[in-house]
Length: 311
Image (tube, rainbow, N blue to C red; front, top):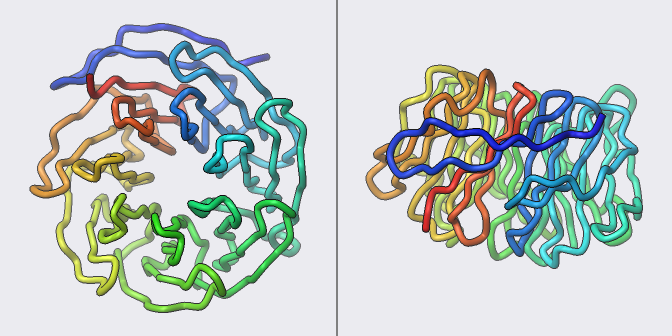
């Protein structure tokens, strides 16, 4: 059964306006918005990636090929391809126009799955986080492994490229945050981000700040060069599953297992938006549109919701 669209009135707090809800057949695990702000890409527990029209929720493409839940999705910077990572350990590239699979790569060994996926700003490389705790760097055009390194002693739950493409940041269930040289996948620094498992990581648009989320229910902001903790954002009742900066860097959004999505002011650390009853259960991923006016959230409750947060 195809995912279908339902337009529902969302009761929200503050400035958030009602928007589109996409109802799926299984829980959603991953989410991305295209560089032009017109498409929404999802990965779900049914082992399928789907492309939707962001403004209408209409399904455009169905991408089948994984044999495990699609835990990571991303668009290429030029918007012509999409990348997916499956819990079975496969990474794939697809043509966004035709839906044809361009390549597929087994990222880990026997019994090793993928947990996270990031694409470099130049579109040439992909970083994959594995359940083995390893980081894998992949040529985005050829689908060939460039480098692989031991990163964490537990699953690597989050990965992000810096905006200039020179560094990669990773976070693992060991609570560690690592910085890498993106060209050679050489470790530069290591910090303790969370006393419990780390779940998510992301760079600010200027590359100066890192946001992380973890099982301690906190969102933390760090200096991306020194690892100095700048601020702790406390408000979630359960582990934080996803973090993302707005394109202007003035706000950072987070999502939690309790079903909440919170938008925080980066400078003050104050929560400024909190869609009431965002999801009935864990929110697995969030993403801003390129203009910062929309915030999409994916949940284990089989829904994706698109929130209008700006004019």
